Image (cartoon, rainbow, N blue to C red; front, side, top):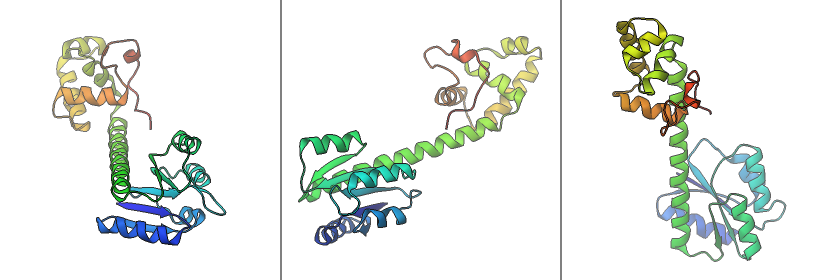
Length: 218
């Protein structure tokens, strides 16, 4: 777990890095926003402690540039000049938290840990979504024909009649679908279909679900 610390105050920077490292976190210091942007690695679970007021490039400008570069990391703003409009602006820009200097050590650590947990959860959800999309994309056309009515609650006989095939053939495709989707039970498959947006959990046979199965959005 990584914490980028961006602050032009060298004393504050050093003390913050020491505090973070004292609890086992990896802290990477920067005295300018541009240096941070050039070195930032968005592929690692991380958060950013970002000073609002810095020469050359302030914290809000850094955050805007992060968004432009696709650096989707949680940001905790810190400032020695906190006022209501500034705090409101920070949260409207998507900040996780806003801390006033000098920061309470435990408050800072709690804020960082919470931001890192949220980032780890987001990355895990993104990975799970990508894996689900890959499994759906691996289905053959006939397997997709069986998947949707299956998760909508239709029986194998009903599906066979609809597709004009035998019940035995439907059962064969059902087994293949379960294997490709890595579902141990039908309930698991239904849950995947809900996450993928194939069916409405409150109305699985509704109009939206009547469409051909699609892969979930990225």
